[in-house]
Amino acid sequence: MSTAPDSPRPAFAFIAFDAAGQPHLKAQRCTSCGATYADSERIACGRCGGRANVLEAFTPAREGTLHSAVIVRRGFPGIEVPFVSAVVDLDGGPTLKGTLRNVGLDPADIAPGLRVQVRFDDALGRRDKEGNAYVAHYFEPLSA
Image (cartoon, rainbow, N blue to C red; front, top):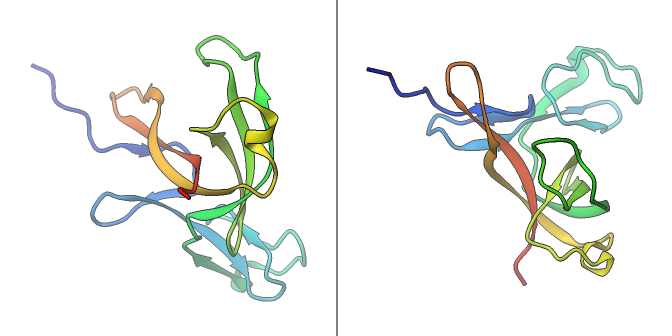
């Protein structure tokens, strides 16, 4: 008899789960210069050099603007192509890289300035050695 795996795990260090088990992003902001970072382990600001006591944790917005994107047509085994790899500036920071879903593969569909939202979903069926699923972030266009 096997036991069921525990709850999903974050695929990236900047994903956390709230008390209800819902995923959200976590980040840090420098109180000296305003730089933002998609993590919570940073000990110094990369922009101004401020130390850990100037970095504060915050929960970033789940909406942002597409900064750049590329259509990936060649990958490595186990990764379905084509897909859109995107860099998104979240409202209020930070900037994240991820997969842009539910868009066409015409460059006009992925022009900079497109408004997007962060969605959380299964990380392509990946599992840890105990059988726990991973949760990753994806970007999708905001509904008009």
